[in-house]
Length: 209
Image (tube, rainbow, N blue to C red):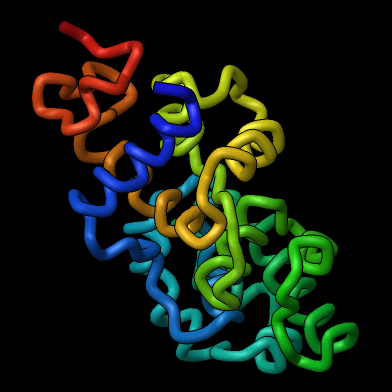
């Protein structure tokens, strides 16, 4: 099988294994997904989901967050880690959305990455999940799996994104990223992957026999 054929096969098998390809972060709209994703840096999605209900209760929109007291935001997100930097970014993100984008979360990677603390991973997630555009979210699980299966030979997120865009069907790329995260948590874990239970074992060059 060619590399592209193996990628397509992986897409099809993970689609059967995880029919519902959804983000594990909880949100109601584009702004809340953007904020939750910024909070998830060096923090688990589970922890973020414990923090955001109170945060979004007080600051549910970019307009309310733009006018928030930074001390209050810090207090609400403290358990997410790096809370001072994140609190600053949340307010700056909201202010720029209000001033530069008329209160609407932008729908392109180029515009999203002008927001404070927002990188391509977050921008891809918003473009894919909210705006339905082809996206490649380079989560650590995704990068690990793409390397293990020989789809890429780099840990550089941008290089992984660019190479996988060439290999993945555009209409399935975003869902494949979500499924890869679930697969990476359940089976293809960082240490001691469960190769004996893996439905992709026969197309993996690094399988453990």
